[in-house]
Amino acid sequence: MSQRGLLEGWEERLVTVLAWPDVERILLFGSRARGEADAFSDLDLIIVRRTSARFLERLGEAYQRLAEAALRLGVDVDVLVYTPAEYRRLLAEGNPLVTQAHWEGRVLYEKSATGGGALVSPGCL
Image (cartoon, rainbow, N blue to C red; front, top):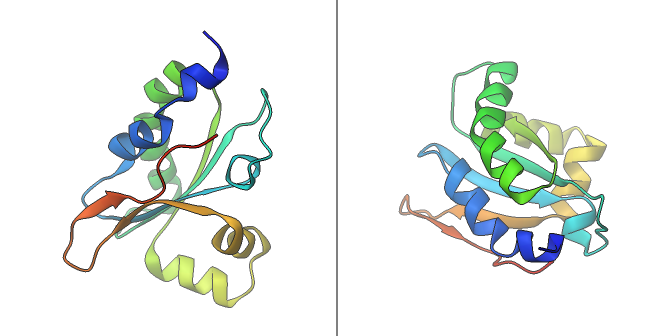
């Protein structure tokens, strides 16, 4: 099966794996968000979630959840997990990675004001 075939529906699968109850947003950035991906491109994600866990603990949790999905997709996944306050602070400070991801990225999931979440940007690679 081609990589394109393997990746069909990948956004929905990743959102299902990563949408903890405290997740507010999942943002895809990098070459896949820009539509410039090739066969060697990974998936770059930022997860914004309300949690008191330390940064490295959050990363560990995300990678644990992602391990099986990434293997099934046959693609590497890089993820950063920020609290809402950290994300806002990094944007305000002009952090280059977070700023570019915020403005050029694609929101895959966003929790609504009523507390429910939805896949925002259905798959297109």
